[in-house]
Image: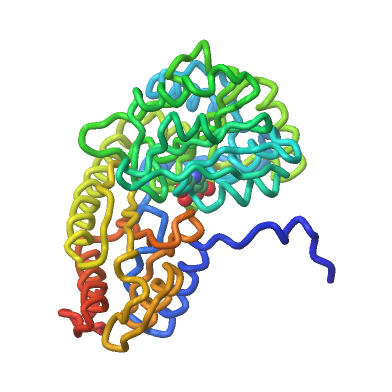
Length: 412
Ligand SMILES: Cc1ncc(COP(=O)(O)O)c(C=O)c1O
């Protein structure tokens, strides 16, 4: 059977592939420590679940408006005003099947062939692939670990060409775990504000997972009057409310953009699952959920700090201190091209290192290659502290060529 040429320009999501490999090993009875998952290990708060169950019981099982019910979009508009200082009315909001679908539709609705999209590296694996599918050209700007992976205004200015049409920013970041402060966003904005044909796509899905008392800043809030017609604000319920499986994302933006996305979505998926709409209203407006969100955030903050310290204590690994999301993005450069572990394996890049780690000591991490750094690995700390310790013991043992302190077979 013929497979369309357009698929030859993209590859499968590495994060999902690693997860699948680890799951396959687990199914064989192997005690795998998974640092691959990009999802909270907590359950969705009960009131949100109850809202969906209630909606099902009430017969909310039919088609809904493509962009989502007015109630759900109003709840999102209220949240954007209250939390983000963004003034989007409900008709400038569209709800889609997860953050991924939101971003994909936004790019499909705005990019023409050959349009350049500036993506700071390290980046979420799907941005370049989505840009390519939309006919655009990803242009990477490499953030330096010494600046917590954040790009500088000068780097952004240097990347601009007459073909630049979009800048994607993700703060807090997957995989870097870094967060841009409002002043840093302002400095980046000053570089591109004089180029009115450049749109900013702001992926704010980790906005609530911030540490050290920081508060997130939406791109549009830097200067609403200046940016309201040039900003695409993407978000989802997946990470904040531990709702990855529900597949709820949303985009807020100028009316023509939302109309274009609506047109596209109406021919693809129509509305998201009908009985999830009341769950959105509940998630964003029931104060009971705030406590659950804060408890998760606190747990991530403690685990992130712990994992970061332990990683830096391993000879050959260095890691930038995470300030948000739930990932450590660690350099394994010091471990490449030299014999490692009891089997004295030599790894030349992060893919080989990750493969060996899984094979030798059954720890799943995601190689940084598809995030733009082939000498880094991403470790998710969306898992318990005991699992973090067990996994890091094994990594340490692998690196030092010792037997792990806790047996590979000990229950998790
Ligand atoms: C930076 C970033 N954006 C978007 C998404 C997509 O989120 P969703 O699971 O809602 O599709 C993810 C998921 O991991 C992500 O890390």
